[in-house]
Length: 401
Image (cartoon, rainbow, N blue to C red; front, side):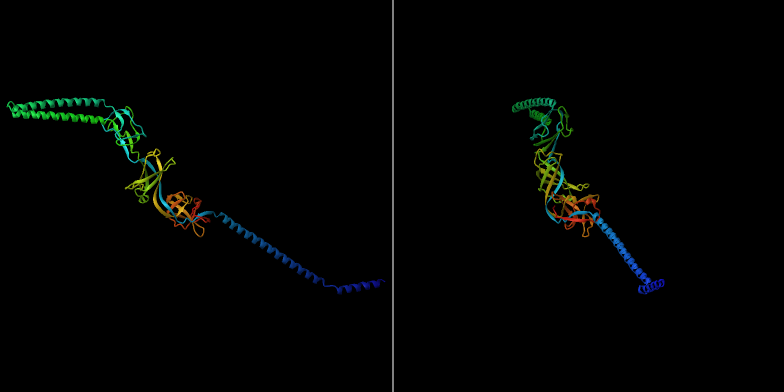
């Protein structure tokens, strides 16, 4: 029984061995599959790493570009074009009397007994402004009047003697020579009367000149004399008058501005601190230019008004025809030691400094007389934060806004 069992077992083992695959072949197959899987996993990992690197690198570039873009300033620009504006010259000047009349003592002088006017009063020609003591001159006039009477009495006696002599000469009692002598005496006495009267008139005229009189009608601007003061011809100005109360504005203008003016042009004058505007006209243009300031004076005539005080400041706008030129807001114009300038943005978005010359300043803007054609893109604001060559982004607005 044991024999049979061994035979069956060996038979079974043999048959099983010949019926299954080779175990080494299975191992090779499994190794190849495993290697393929590893390669695929490595490839996938490599692709993932490359994708991650690309993503990070691309994102960094975009962030850098975005950051650079964020750092470029955005500025507002305007193409000003060319505007037609009424030409006008605006400056600040000094108010003064058109005809200032200084008044002083023209006589021998003396002590002031009375002052009859004050600044701000109107006076007429010949009106007494101040009375000077004349007690001495009064006595001199009285004495001279007596001298006139004495000379007149001598002249009457001389004439009477001559008349009597002429009646006796025909009878032969008086010679012709005596008559000539009496005639000369009469003529001398008459001349003495004239001398005495002339001296009296001189004293009276000198006395009359003691009082200080207004040389013409006008407004009293200044009073520089007080009661009891001793004055004479060397005392200087005691009163100052504005003839007929007429005023004027003295405006210092450049050579270019003066060249555009003519006598008779209208001017609007506004005193400092006053909201009232006065209409005047240019009545004189300086024929001389100051060699230091390169300016001349235009004088604007004004009628009297209490708001016009000599010595005060006033702004004046003088009409001077029309002008066609670019106009910019004041915020667009910068100034430094080299002069006025603006920033102009080119087609590539780069800001460039451009020197300009400014003209009339109006409520709408500043006229640019030189440096711009009007077609440029000019930075309206923030020019003070730019440098020549800076990259900018622009936002265009319509001119006049």
